Length: 613
Image (cartoon, rainbow, N blue to C red; front, side, top):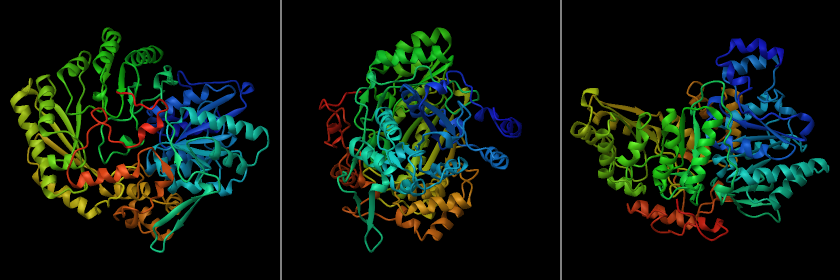
């Protein structure tokens, strides 16, 4: 360890974030390595180490011969101040080497509010922020992750962006990069070749935005010979795909400090607000025996006392009972708990609940999203009030005394009646507890939480305007005034972060100047309330000549060219517009298991079909 680092670590919070040396980390002999990748997560260690995607890709890329992938996380403010004062550049945890020594610097960006931290990590590493200021092939700065489905706000900073799932495309890029570096290619030649030959690669410098007089985009023009739209990559057979069963065991507590096992990707539902539900289509499940084997192997190799089964909607996995039984056969004698996030109120059962409480009982969370049936139908949530109340009854009869309910305010077509309906639904849940609770003497804890709806790219609501911050606050006050029960707690998210998130998620390339201005004049970890500055974002918009309401609060025309139209996530624009029309008619669309709606996602499957979860 660098002696300068030894001196500063006693002066910062949670020094274990910065030391590495964890059990199961991948170490390689530098003599056997000819390509080094700094795998960067633009948030704290506790967040990045909880990210299942990062764990998978860390393992996958390290399987390549001669390639060593090391982890890099963002420092908290105290650590960053100490590093800058001591002249310590950002470094990788495995080797302790500076990020600037690596061939490829690869970011995983899952949240738009992390954009400023990407710039900050480059700066602490001594790497120029903008791609145009990095003329050489090395270091190559790339990114992937959900936020890349709208690549334009970060386009000037990145050499290459990966669209879709990275297990295969990442390795293809690294192998091409190795050839390019060893043969002395120019950066331009490598980027052009990658864009031409590897599906899922978007090179921003080879695409030029053009604007109309009113400030809207007219097109994003590709260089000659490149596709007008970059098609995402998916993994078709998850059972045959690499999955880490010896994940790194962190040296300090992280957010999700447990074994994570993936059930399936995609979602059979079609919630019209949900970006993940559209961009991760089609549904592709793992076999039960694969999940059970991976879960047990992971528990054995880590010593964790908790395992979680992950997906966008875990209770939609048909063989879920078989998986629970198979894992609990191993877990129960060892007092290892099994948890299932992402449960739906319309298919939560005592059968599943009885399996979960064999070891340890946790809290229950449901997300009705809207307070009335009309609005739930409009967003295609497909959960009825009787479904939610039945699930709560099952939980209360089974001994649960706490339920969290999540909603959004500002959804398209929402009225005051819908807002008040949230309070009324909370009262119905409380009434259900009073009727059916097994342990009334313990009391009940009902928590209602609301956030401000953010229209997201590649969803049926991508054309919608976000409600203004004042209007959101009015709806918060209306709901708060109608929640009377002492047993019910109401939490709400402030609208300012959601407003900035809407600007970034729907922004075009002009928003890059806003991001850089905020990085230069405010603290970088803008995803954290400790550092978030709404004033800094508004000042940056003013300095860059950008009207934030143009991106957040403006309804798009049906045929307007969107910044993300350069990306093909396999769901057609026609389908999204049809779903929007269905929303305004408050009409449901069937889930993928009942009927194919022809969204286009099946076109990615080479076998012509979609596996049924």
